[in-house]
Image 1: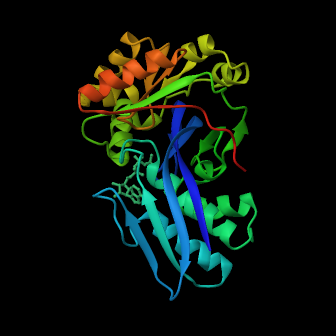
Image 2 (image 1 turned 180 degrees about the vertical axis):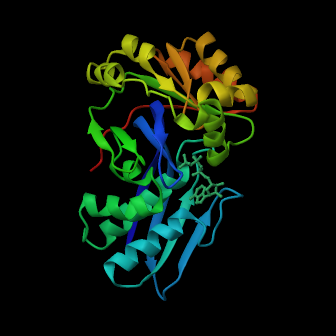
Image 3 (image 1 turned 90 degrees about the vertical axis):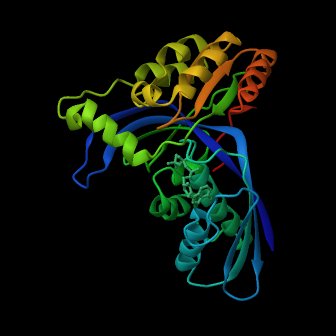
Length: 292
Ligand code: ATP
């Protein structure tokens, strides 16, 4: 019994912080969208009880540290039955880039195992398991476009952008540690004691109207300014995208990944060429609809 699942990348069209939680984590306010750039995850049941991970990319952990491994463990725990499983990951999403590549792989394993076992769990139950793996996993299960706040693990679906918005996803330079990125924000905003998060009405309206002009005017990422100061590649990639004809370009998540939105595929392809010439990663992608 096998399943092949696409593990789609996520970008943040809006990313803000509304305050610090008692547990030390941050309350986020975010709007996420999935795009067609994806890892491909093949799942196959095997004899015995081992969870075996293979990946074509060096540097991805192949043991219980891999989120795909953890996902299989939690799935079997909830199922009350232990099986052997082989998980092969073809990695296309850059790592430690703020694109939730690991979360997407974990989500793919939950969806794949649920298919193989004839859908024992609803999408809500899969999301509950996913939330134990990481805040982005429920969104990576559902896909599409969503608003999320608090810990960020309870996405509320929004309409998706149309496929005539052409995205380029890129990243270059050293990865960013998410805890360090939040620590930088705490320094700048005095642990968010007096900070008021931006309203999301405009961005949600722009998405509902599939309106690129107002989308371009309402994208926001609180991490962009501080991370850009440390990672020259962020500004460099944004400039290449704008020079190639992007209507707008912004850093995603805690960086250093950057996305741009284009109206013409030729401009998007030009941006990919110019960015990859600098030895950075870049790929075109289109918006993905909700899958559950
Ligand atoms: P997020 O946006 O969810 O914080 P990210 O995109 O910044 O994640 P990932 O690509 O998910 O970062 O990887 C972060 C770390 O997670 C890696 O350095 C790696 O050690 C570990 N990891 C565990 N499982 C995976 C996986 N399946 N794919 C990639 N990295 C994984």
